[in-house]
Length: 456
Ligand code: FAD
Image 1 (cartoon, rainbow, N blue to C red):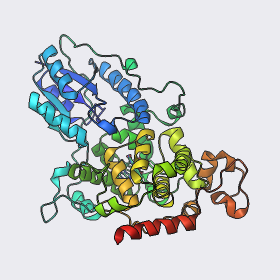
Image 2: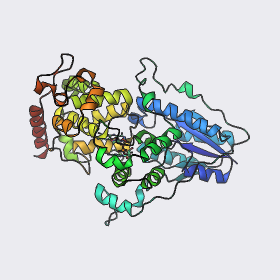
Image 3: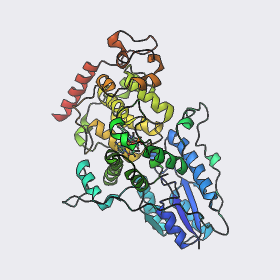
Image 4: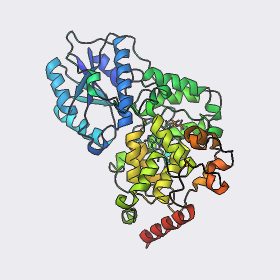
């Protein structure tokens, strides 16, 4: 009998434990099911739909070259898988485990109807593997990191098979082009193609390019003007390359990879948090933040729109928000600055910012996005302190963002390295660039007063 291989955020053929297990049991029927209903508010965002389209096309091609196919279906995962077992006589479903709350629900629903076998491989270590001395999962990053390191390196990655046998008769597949995953009018993703190559081959290439540069990661990762980070995040989100493979390739590179691997472990940490607290994306982990007097969007709507469009009058924030819109990605340092600006300078609830990122990031990830937004807000379990308010005009020169601003805010391109961070103070603001939507000092005082009110 054939077996079903259920792809989700693991769109790869190498180091794919579910594929290895499925191939041992019989002819394999690879399936991807698009379900926009189950995740409710967290259905795949617009930027990621662009990515998904290309990644599925790439996976289908990789399967075809191995004598296999990718069957596409839409609807409820459990119902579609059950339908496929009826159509094909498949006796079992193999898949990698995923930890987003809607995937866990879907896994439970599938397991109630069918013989589902889940495998590890989306993370460096499955979330339930590490416990504190008190027997609970880790909430704080540093001890989590130390405990995880005891289990590293992960098992060596397995190569992609050269042939994958399929059933004598294939079930029908929907057409990818019918799914409407790509934007039409206006085509806001026109800048994505130059930046990204979705799919396993693109991921592997990105990884091998970065391998040569990892020695500079420590010194360059905070400088948005450089390409100092791996840009593997969307590939990792879609599972086009396994974290274990990244680990092995990077730790064997020339130069010290420690800082990079520490960042990669943040991804595991974030997944442990959403596994523990499935509502992390919509609920403050510290409930005193439920009392925070966030500004109502009816009053703050103009500021929120300026933030989204990169028109706040703070060059570093605007550069980041425009990079996000144009490429679907933003440098980590600038994500922190832009998120902090929304939360503290504009006093807008972090959840509005997280939603915007969800729709615009090609690497939007429920765990990483939620944990990082709550980290910046100070509402998370392991978080920055709210009253430590980042000053964008200090951060910008500190991290040498002049060239980055030139690239993304062309109105300011003519300004020199000093004035470009804060044109107003140099009386150098071109008429086409907006005035600051709020002053730093007044914004800071408003934020601190709001914070004091929840501490009372
Ligand atoms: P690198 O520096 O090369 O790091 C390698 C990998 O490690 C990344 O691809 C990522 O998978 C992981 N990683 C690195 N930093 C973090 C971190 N702080 N938290 C968790 N994992 C990390 N990352 C996402 O993948 N998806 C998101 O939706 C997301 N939202 C964010 C929202 C905010 C407000 C902030 C401050 C950060 C967010 N991040 C998110 C984390 C981080 O900014 C990105 O992972 C990183 O910028 C991706 O670029 P890179 O692949 O070049 O990173």
